Amino acid sequence: MVLEGNPEVGSPRTSDLQHPENQDSCVLSSPSEDAQPGEEPIKYGELIVLGCCEEGGEETEAQRGEVTGPRAHSCYNGCLASGDKGRRRSRLALNRRPHANGVKPDVMHHISTPLVSKALSNRGQHSISYTLSRSHSVIVEYTHDSDTDMFQIGRSTENMIDFVVTDTSPGGGAAEGPSAQSTISRYACRILCDRRPPYTARIYAAGFDASSNIFLGVENESNVLQDGSLIDLCGATLLWRTPAGLLRAPTLKQLEAQRQEANAARPQCPVGLSTLAFPSPARGRTAPDKQQPWVYVRCGHVHGYHGWGCRRERGPQERECPLCRLVGPYVPLWLGQEAGLCLDPGPPSHAFAPCGHVCSEKTARYWAQTPLPHGTHAFHAACPFCGAWLTGEHGCVRLIFQGPLD
Image (cartoon, rainbow, N blue to C red; front, side):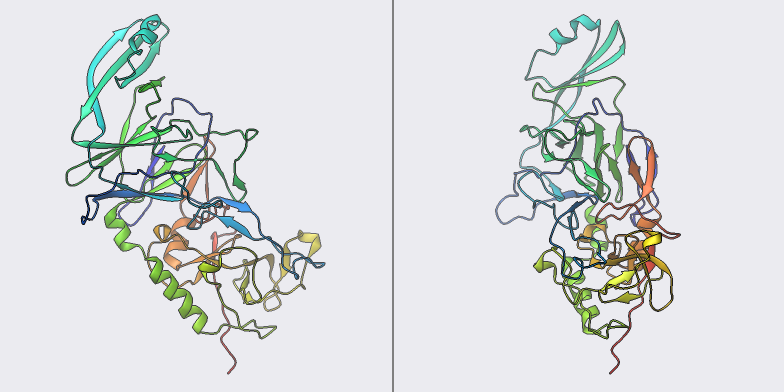
């Protein structure tokens, strides 16, 4: 399934992308070809894995007390929980290859089903088989296309897969181990990019296996990718950003400048009067530190961590804000670090509810109004940094900081 966005990563529309199999899951990888020495590679676009959290880290002393706070998470907020390695990563650029490897339709055969395996025995010939009925199949043989580059995405770690993707579960964790039931296809999809301007990228259902074959129950469809297109792999969702779209997104340097500016304002806890500060991304995301800002996600009042105000009758994580008395989740604030998910370099003024990831108002309101695929038939707005389902009336909250008393 591809959800098409507008030039500002805008309101998506839905179109079906049929999958040949639906039995495994995904995380991404990048091609190894480089540009010629001294030349900037031509970038077709970038794929970004929308968030998945994996519980981890140690609890703070405050959290080990009578009233416990949420544990830290390591997530797809700019990097995989296990680190970006080889063909597995949270974000990857598709660059023009030194030599074209695309394929295009050549010859079509209408045959009876028993002849399919014989017709597909040539490993050197790319082909796609469509089963139209029990006695009728169509095989399309493909030939080399010098005008396109092909990139394949799927759960398989075989060499023909450029980007290896594993399942993500909203706010829960990546499916790992043999017991984890994956829903992403081993050969989920392929993207063909024109090697000449305007470098149009098209996505197709399924990728070629080790025998250079694809088996589909229906006729294949293609979709032109636009900036902001969401690619549903039935277990993970990818965001497509074009070079032009990335120029409108903030850089990591800009995000860091916003963090430093927010800390320079010396926000204080209105109760404990301690100075709060967003931690540096270089520290890594382990457990909240002593200066970590925390927020009551129903009202947006920002505090330092404290252990009072728990309303056990409302739930183990429900707290009463000492300023306005609203009861709701009380969570640490973490700055969103995946720049490609941001719409502008605005100040970190809003947080997603209930996870506490912080970004600009424009970015927060956009993702809070964008339903993301969940399963095969459902959609739900989620935090793009960690995948947690959004709650509350708006899905995000404006942060209310108290300045220094001096």
